Image 1: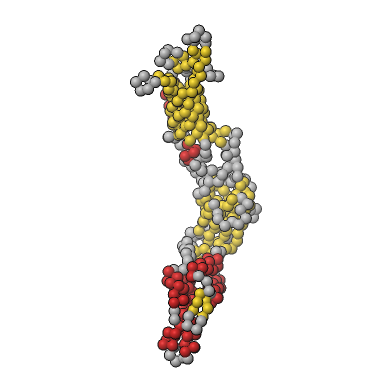
Image 2: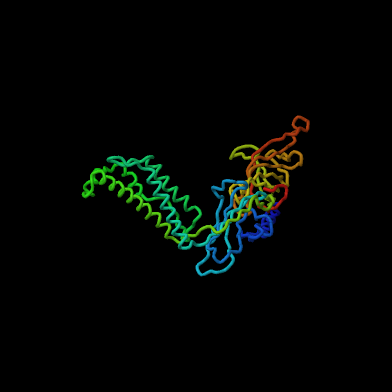
Length: 390
């Protein structure tokens, strides 16, 4: 019987194929606003989105959101295609290294970007500078000898950063440069404003009256802050900026229905009956069974390799007393337990075995059913079954 097990394992090793995961291809139709002629998106595999673009489009973003996510604040995944320098083709190909859940639906946003013209860049700069200057002026109060912030220092800095971030949210840079907030130099300048004594203005503007000198000094301090803010903002604006040309939204788009996995196991295991190391009483033999994984490999490899295993031994056992050990119902020892796939096709099993023996010491045939520890190792073949979608 051991020979049978070895042959079965060898056959499964010979027939097990190690298939490398490949990217499925998805074609987006701009006019019809669907994928693959309205076919479901591939589930539990990476995929590539192909589509057409005009010559002036230099970047395409494809963002995946949960279905019916109205706010669309945070995408589950965003893929970005950038037109290679010198490429004038009217097609893009964007790998999406994100695996969608089977039998589910998602909202997909496609955003197309083009380069800014010089006039548009100047308009953006003026608009941002005006907004920043207006905020700075509204956040301070000039007194006789000092300048007071109308809000706490940290709130002022947060608001300045937000003005720029909100003003640039529809823009991208080719080099992926992102505005990360104003530097510590700007922070220090804002923080020092309240420590400045405007009386020093009479020495810096000696030709003016005392009151006018203080006013001129206050204007210079605020102008220096504005210029510093302008300079750091302009560092971002001098990048190769792109703006949104068009946005397409595909709502509640379905994914394919993947079949569940069920594994057939053929292996060899042992059952402990009684005793310790010196007087161990156990049975062993080949078994067959099935394993149902706790998870999908695409989302949790550990739980996909861990399974609930059940099966039956092909032969009955004989204990140390010479008694035949069978099992209830099927008249063979059965087992149930946890299994873990340690290698591509090898599963380690451990759990409990259900055994039965006949005790006729009293002159009556009494059935003695026991639950005993079980361990085993098996080879397996994965099957696709359709009793579940996820």
